[in-house]
Image 1 (cartoon, rainbow, N blue to C red):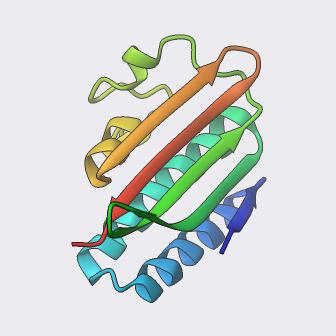
Image 2: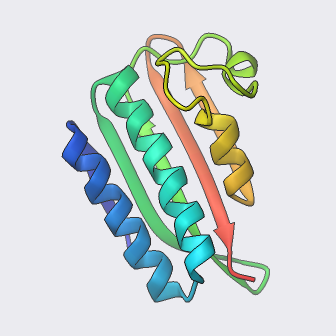
Length: 131
């Protein structure tokens, strides 16, 4: 099951959230975790929209060590992030948004990894495991 939403405009952020909520529900996540997952998707999709112009969010079921989870992958070919440590600081925001940003996504999810190359783009993976 590989479900991706291309992020080009604000409506795509809504579509990605909806997809995430549906997949989370199918996998058996409760309403609190569904809300965490959709919030994380919102942040990642909004970052693509604001900073890269376009990209995609993919939402997949993942399994490891007998656990089942939901994996969110965010990919873009935007300007990239020069200082990953800085964007991972709480309260850092270049958009004037809520500032939850990437640190917020990391807190909402169980696993988080980011890879970014200036001038080439950013790739983020976040996983929420079923309890």
